[in-house]
Length: 492
Image 1 (spheres, one colour):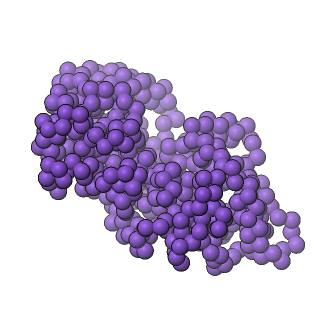
Image 2 (cartoon, helix red, strand yellow):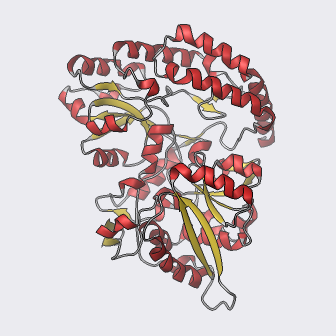
Image 3 (cartoon, one colour):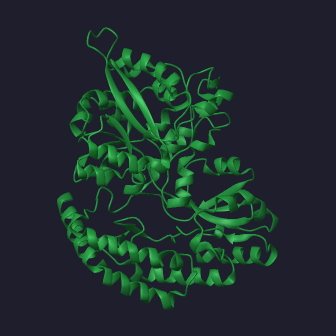
């Protein structure tokens, strides 16, 4: 399996956000034809920027891609990949300078979608979807396009992947079996204590609860800005914006985390640890929390080399950030927005093109082992781009060993998600930029130590609240409430 492509699991563990499993190659499917080789017009060359480490065989694959797209829509593409760590900064500079580009990757976590839509970096695509993107609108769950609107308009095409976010408690099955632990009873942070205690008493070299500095207790809130202490309740009816630091739910969770910290259930360095990847690879952990998707346990087990099992920690919820986790936008600088949408439509509806871009050339980078299944060949190391980043994942071929109903399970998973109360709302911080910056500075001072249980919340939570208010949190909340109220009224 192309484990480097398993972005959703990695991101969910780091960020509380969810994307997708890997998949690959296929046969030609001419059902999405939008043009033809008979056109006398000169082919349009589209410049496409996307995220991921540049690959050795990109030009080889693009040559095959362009033969196909020239025939289908009289267009070719020039794909330029920028590695993860550099993507946001480089794209920000190029977009601001007017660098020629047509299609670009954007998301809630890289080259910020909402922020750049409001800056005018992207072309509004509602009309383009109606005319050149009908296949996209027929394929995507409506929640993707509804949840990715910015001020009532669509500026990007979300990848068709897992839609809701569902948190689970993950467990090292070897330890679960060894001590006959019942994970079915673990529904909340507090209910995990007997299992953590067992491991602490019997396995001194094992970390019972694996967390890092980004950990936040699972709360029944929909945040206006991710990991900022301002939210509405998931079951809200009045859409009141709350300071989560003042809620009984958070205070109870912080008390539990501090109890676990003192008991040695979490690492003493949790508040400064940037990643638990190395710990997970050693197998010296009992449980952590992550976002899931269909067949995630199988993928985690294959990745770590030992069995991992999980049980739900919360409900399946469609948030703005889960919808915007992977998107393709059309640049405001594009001279060919209609042709760019034709290409995106083809990419998201044509199985052959989608798998060619995903996994390379059949019998060079992979081989088919069934009508809907493939396995990588040795040359695949020269062409391994992130599956999640380039469109409709449900078109990709299965990896060897995947169940035949894999994509049916994704559809069932997506259908089960409930919409978060703020789905479709995007907070405009332009009037309070100074206050937001000041609050973020306070967050850096207190957040990790409080959330990981490293400090006593009875002592440090009041200090944090005082500094948050001094930084302008109350002013931000007033502005947020005004915008939320207007948004709710507009929906009625």
